[in-house]
Image (cartoon, rainbow over all chains, first blue to last red; front, side, top):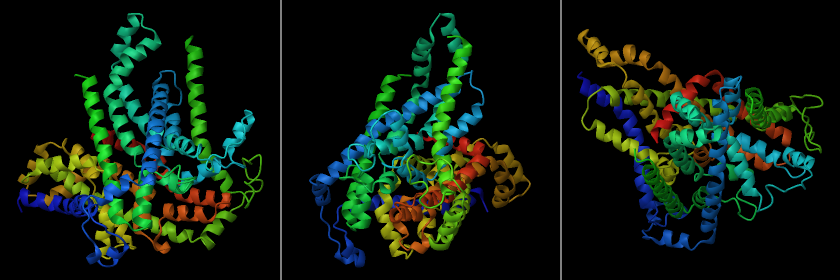
Length: 292
Length: 273
């Protein structure tokens, strides 16, 4: 058998799987979003009708859709800077020459990333418990009144953000640490000889050199945080007063609880387009800041 | 600031951060050994008065935990084995074997990495329903049998294999399959282990898709079962912590043992942006 024939056999299984179970559904998602596919159509595809842009029009008039979008935006706008900031701070500490037991610290700080999201969400639900939770206990020691973290619409999303930062910061920490290690030591030497302080070296050497890595970390983290789902599913079930319903949580309920699959597909597609547009803008900005 | 003070500060901050990060996991293990109701007290107890395995026994005897454990293990092993063979073969071919439209196809695969998987979920569910795979192991395994990310990391690694190695094997009369099996796979071993760890942990921890495609509780994976149990047993702190330990400890252990490979995978994956 020729190399060309063999190569086709090597790629065929993977491409077939990706084509049939990923590319085809993505294209079909757009098509389904233009139909009124519901539980009757699920029983018999003949009950499905083409409705044009009706799903989109109706969603844009649905208050809960906008609330879900607003909640998700809140999660991203507060959660991403906190998350990336934590990652950067700890990466800088780990990068310091003064660190002892670097590998041990790195492993401990990274551990939450590999845990099962559902399992640790269950833990944090108890940590946030109003009466018996360790968090209120610790706050009590500081003289702060008990807070009903997951039962109060004001505090539920901040609680989920704290949990998400804990779960995720280790991932970006590793990427940023690798970025820091790639900065040539000579640059710091030169700055030191010029008498630059620690703070100035950070601002004028570290941050600019880390720019491209930071840009990538931001793009990936923002896209990831827009896909918030399991945290509210386990910790709050979207409540209280729908203050933690995210776009994907809304899509899940619309599609797989109420079986409005046409409408759910429209939700997923709008989320995708929004993430895509945001990513494009960020990449444009990153390129504009770094002409090289 | 003297270096001594700076050293104490850096290490002190890291120590505090590490303790705060690990504390919830340690607390989970501790509460899982407490008697029912013991953790619902103020101030919250940090260690069990009399350690007991009662919660674990309860999970296996009445909550069907054994069944969920088997489901998770079967699905994780199946997805990892099948997707590894498909991704490694395809990644190698994209790097080293010529075929029509190779670079164009690879570029479209890369571009598709920006599409979140959730976009495909509704039609994928309908497709699998037509195929009779909803509510079966197949519903989880089949869509996961290959991944763009997997093909990508294998290709990047395989690019470094010198063409002369392949040429020499061909001149010796080895078939393409033999070359793949006895020359390529051994060379790719590090990336194969990395990808295996990544795929296994990803499948083990996955939640949204199994939640959608498995409705029959006999087929639940551990995360799906745990989410469902936690809705029924809101007050049963100790029982839920035991469930969390069983769900997340295998993932943590695999990570601790194969940490080096996992970290390599993150570095490779971060190139994709």
